Image 1 (cartoon, rainbow, N blue to C red):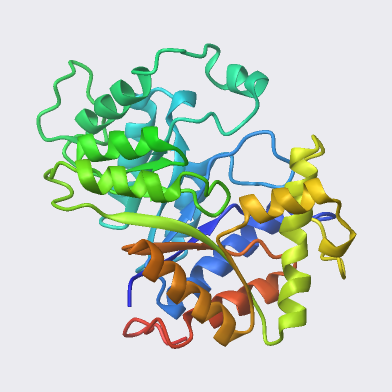
Image 2 (spheres, rainbow, N blue to C red; image 1 turned 90 degrees about the horizontal axis):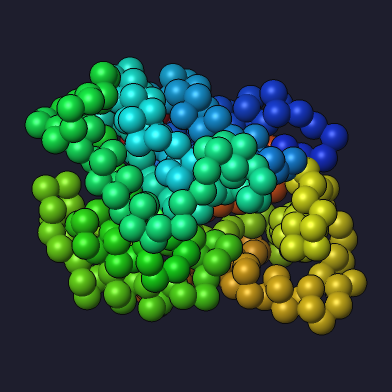
Length: 334
């Protein structure tokens, strides 16, 4: 069975706070570690009332400090928002504190609206080659023999594993060219997934970090002991997507009975598209859906996200995912 990992946006539920979200994030990470998940990633988003992981490197440190074995990383850092040197220093620090456990996934979207993006970096480059140059500069900061006159301390020689994230063909081409593992955001942007995977695998160039192609795919799971409960739990993220596309971003809403049945044609089509790679149901139903997705894509790893309003129900969803699939590591009994 392929490795399974967790993508956590550290959701801020309606009526709650970021402080509560951080407590839940650490609790979920410890739960995932006990269950045998491979890695735990947090994503950089800005100005989103329902996402608390804006200061991603800080939150990675919080999670890594409260866990023992599980890999912890960024899925991802939006590199256009930052100087490569600053990211090298931050993740060099994390790798020095938690050696062998830190991943650095890199994306080229701002993770925000354009006004917020300007506030983050003060300028926006329209040069399509800027992101590849920034990735290479960042990789050089982690090398044993950096080509820059400026050095990242800590950072130099630490070889923090880099990943390219994407939801289009650009990231697939870049990951293949650089010989890096590739994570596709199929959990919310599935349209070009199969074409991107094919391009990445066909054009992959082996590197010192990655001798063969390695594809990790995002997948939504809303698992519960009954189909009715799972459908109810999934309505929170469905509401969040509809609200976001309508220009009304909000905290993660509480679930609503019969939500999809109330939607119009346009909203239903939106959810069918953005959440097409989703399993909703009982243990046997979600396991079957995951097996089919893996068979269809030949994914090397799945990155599971379960945006569920109730924290205990979210923990239960991940426990169901792990059943019959993951073996808890020695000394970390579930």
